[in-house]
Length: 410
Ligand SMILES: *Cc1c(COP(=O)(O)O)cnc(C)c1O
Image 1 (cartoon, rainbow, N blue to C red):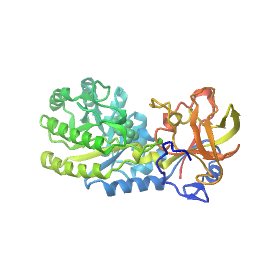
Image 2 (cartoon, protein in one colour; image 1 turned 60 degrees about the vertical axis):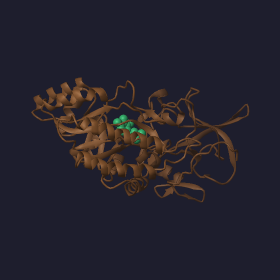
Image 3 (cartoon, rainbow, N blue to C red; image 1 turned 135 degrees about the horizontal axis):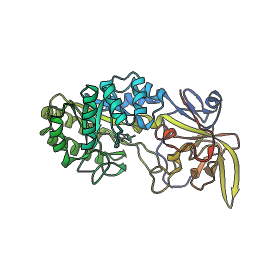
Image 4 (cartoon, rainbow, N blue to C red; image 1 turned 90 degrees about the vertical axis):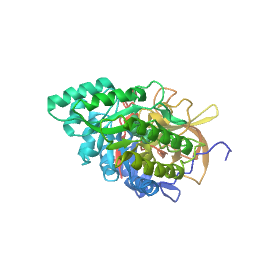
C-alpha cells in the first residue's frame, strides 16, 4: 500500500468472508433481492445505532431534529421519525412526507429561503413552525394567517454575525440568502410583537459538514451569546432555540471521524447556563448527514473493464446522474474520492489500481479515481459508502436518460 492519505476506517457494516453485509446479508444477495443495479440501500439498524450513540453522548435535554433534505425517502423519514424529537423540512413536498411519518406538527419546522405563499399556507394549515428568513416573508405570512384565521407559529432564522470555521459548506457570516442578518433581527422581533403571530424562538444555523471540534465549540458559544442578546428584545420568552448542527462525517482520504466528546461537554455547560438565562427553552440541534449518511450505500455493477494508456477503468452502470456528490460535482472544489469498495473483496484477495467511472459521455462521470480496490470483473458489484445523504435526491437523474436507480430501506 502507498502512504497516501487513507479513508477513515468505516465500521458501520460488518464484513463476512470479505463480503460487505447490508441489512444482514451480502451485498450480492441484496442486489438479487432488489432486482436491479444500480440501487441505494439504507440500513435501519445503522440509523438506529447512530441516534442511540448520539443520545448517549449528548447532554440530557438536547432535542435532536432530523433535517430531511439529507435523505427524504419516505421510508427513511418514517424510521427516523421514531428515533428523533422532530423533523426539519425545506419544501411543501418534504412537509407532506414529514406529516405522513406521524411526527407531531408541533415538532416540525420549515426553513428555507424563498418560501412560496402556497408553502406558507401549507405550513400554517398544518400548524408547524416556520423559520422566517426575511421581513417580507413575515409580512406575507401575517396576511396568510389572517386569511386562514390561524396564528402562524414563527421562529426567526438568524444569519449570524459569525461563521462556522472549517465547514464543508458555509451558511452564515457575511451576506447570505439564508435567514435575517443578526443586526436586523431586533426590528423584526419588534414587528412580530404586534403582528398576531405566535412567536416560538430562534433558529441559528451556521454551517455544515464540520469535522473540527474546536470550530463547532466556537460556533456554539457564539450561537448562545447571540441568542441571549436577541432574547432580550424578543416579544416573549423563547420556547425553542435551534442552535443548528453541522456535525460532519469522514468522506475523503485523510479525514478523521469527528470527536464529539468535547463538543458535548461544552454543550452541557452552555445548556446549564442557558436554562439560567432563558428559562425552560427547548434547545434543538438539527442534523442531516450525521444521522443517515453512513447508513447508506450506492451499489452499481461493472459493465466493462478496459485499459487506456496505463490506466485500468472499471466502467459501471452507476455514475454522477445517480450520485452527483460521489463524482465530486456537489460542492467540492478539488475532486476527492468517496470510500469505494468491491462488494465481495473488501480487504483481502488481489488488489488493483483502477479508476471507476460511469456510463455518461462526460469526463465528470467519475466515482473513484486511481483507487486500490479488490479486483472486480464485469458483472461484479462496486459499492460507494457514505451515501445515505445527498445522494439519490441530490442528483440529476434525467441527465443522459439512463434509468433511475432504486432505493431500498433494509
Ligand atoms: C442542510 C441543512 C441542514 C442539514 O445539514 P447536514 O450537513 O446534512 O447536517 C440542517 N439545517 C439547515 C437549515 C440546512 O439548510
